[in-house]
Image 1: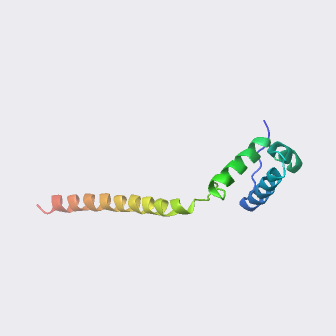
Image 2: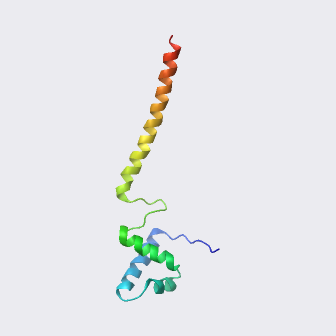
Image 3: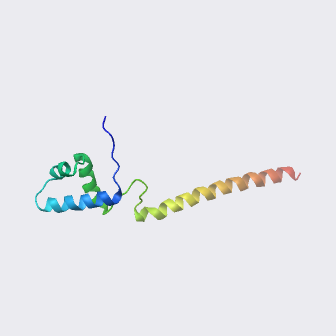
Length: 98
C-alpha cells in the first residue's frame, strides 16, 4: 500500500490552475499528473472539484454558504442541552418543595 500525501490548499490551487490552462492548450490531465508527480486520480478529482466550487473544500475548509448553517446547528445543540438541564432542575426543585 502506498503512502498518502497531503497537499495544502494553495499548492492544489496552483497546480490545478496550471493543469486547466494546459488543458486549454491540448495537454491531458494524465500527462500533467506525470509531470507534477501527482497521482492521476487525485489530479482528476482536484480539477473536477475546482471547476465545481472554485476552491477546495474539506480538511477543515467549509464552503462559505455552509459556514452559517454549521454555526447555527452548533448553537442549536448547545441550547437543547441547556434546555434539558433546566428541565431537570425545575423537576428536581418542584419535587422537593412538597
